[in-house]
Length: 381
Picture 1 (cartoon, helix red, strand yellow):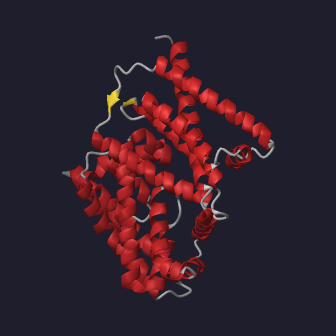
Picture 2: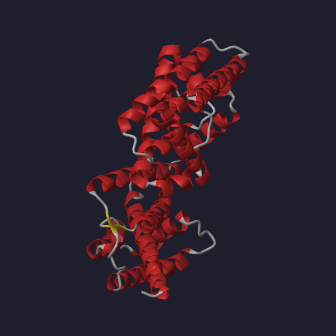
Picture 3: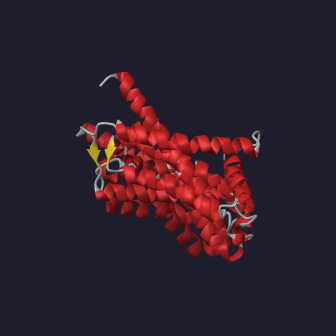
């Protein structure tokens, strides 16, 4: 198979992966926008771009791992169901009314993809081209579909893991894009966490009333998975708000959920994806750390506040380490720091940051000295 042929087939696959979700998202947006309870609360035009983002992610995963029996665009019936179903939804929800058909879909598409420089008539022309192009590309892709020899068959368990991870990520991104309240909360909370102002973050959490524990847990999980934000700020704030015991329990349990999610992301998606999330050099460092300390790696890393929490979780998912061994080691190793941070949070004073950094320095020195002594004794024996 020549390189030009592979390039052409790859381009067809990418176009097919992009066009179909655009049309499907447009149909779903046209359906939901008719709901009066959603009016003025959500930017439903963001549905199509969100569909496209995740279609490209799935396409890249397919190309990266050469997965079979996974991508929907390789199924001819699904392709035409999406194309015709989305078109039918648009026609029905707009009641076949010409004015509605030329305004609602076009406005949704223009708002979603930020095509504000185009008129509605121009967007309608684009929409017709999109439908025709989608049908032609899908037909051509099915006609000269990529050869499947040598492709990896995805197990049912792998499909479930990947689908679950993508579904959770899709819902989060969609809520962030379509709900201004969610977007404001994430941006504001991230800014306060990044500033490491414990008092300000505590007041921010407190403003949510009975929802404060849930939002605290969500932020802890979020920082564990994707955001390089200081977790100790959340733990301190939980201690100040809910007391040493309940605040510590909340911080510990939500951190455990974040660690488990990182582990399963690495287990399901593999090393190439993890390297994109945390960088190749960081993953290489984790490999060396796990090689040096073996089965004690997770426990030791959790006791070292200077070692990245999510990096260790991702790294463990790339090894043969079983989940429950990782989970127990994380729980034990995470407990001392969580208890101390929560206690300091409950009894917080102006010197809380000084106490925090003193604790980190003492713990790191103690663990590093112990590890050095163990290594020296091994070398001399």
